[in-house]
Length: 397
Image 1 (tube, rainbow, N blue to C red):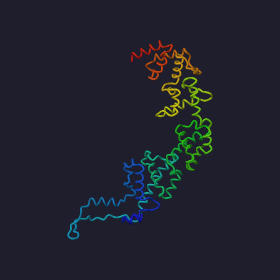
Image 2: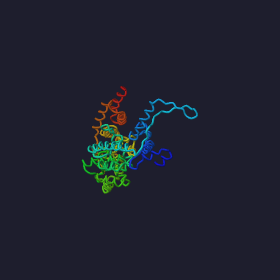
Image 3: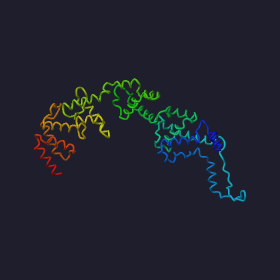
Image 4: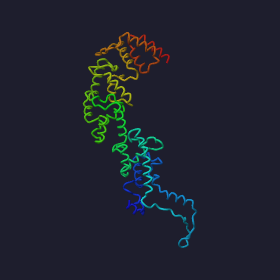
């Protein structure tokens, strides 16, 4: 700063630059860095590179400029008879070590620390979101974010005061990770530690996804992060137990093999959840795959492989309706070669009654259901009964 002040003929720069506290120039440099990282924030009136915090605004200069603006010019005669003007006004310059600025910075810090202490009493940590809504007129999240950005130049007493409230107030990893850890720790305290031998069964969906991500990236986490995960029960030994869970690695392969065998044997995949096939919980596995497929925005790779086995493996209507459809189709057209009846399949009378029920509620069926029922009845032994009802419906529409 001394060299810069000499080059710019601004000797006062060396007076405001102290190693133990940030200066206005450092604030400007951080503003430039923020604008380069997040251009969308530059529209904010309090985040631009030319915005100067109140603590860095010299009050005496502002007052002098306002006085200069209201003072009429005074005429004088310069050299060689050239007329000119000047304002008879002296604007004082900042002198000394900036003790007033230091006092303002300390006052604002201790005020913010009071808000931080109340937040810790309520929540137990200082992992506050950056964009959180101000509480009590004070933006604690933004205040802490600014302190983290300037942590290298904070006075030691400021750092100690914050560490006494939360030792991880400024972690070397993203603050979002720390916030997720606190949420997971609250769940572990309420419901017990994480166990690796149950494949994270029974965990809330958000916690299961976060823990699986930590397991996948465990070797790349910092040693302190691994220690924090151990407080949740997720130690290295538990992660090894998770990877050794018997049915975890080959569940997809076993599921596809069981689904292929069941579809070849019975002609469809409209199985109920309690259904097992050769010791594999096929119904439960298909139910989980259906939930994941419906949550996805497009067909998954696993979903496409199941569609190749049964086009209606994941129908938008109840599975019980789909099973009755397959029973009615097989009763009307006969079982395809190599296909056998499944356990609990409806008999022929039940299938006929189901077809009459579809005829009676034809207008309530979805277009896909109407197409399936029409295809099943076409050419079957109940064609005369069903097709007349379908034709009547078609005439009405």
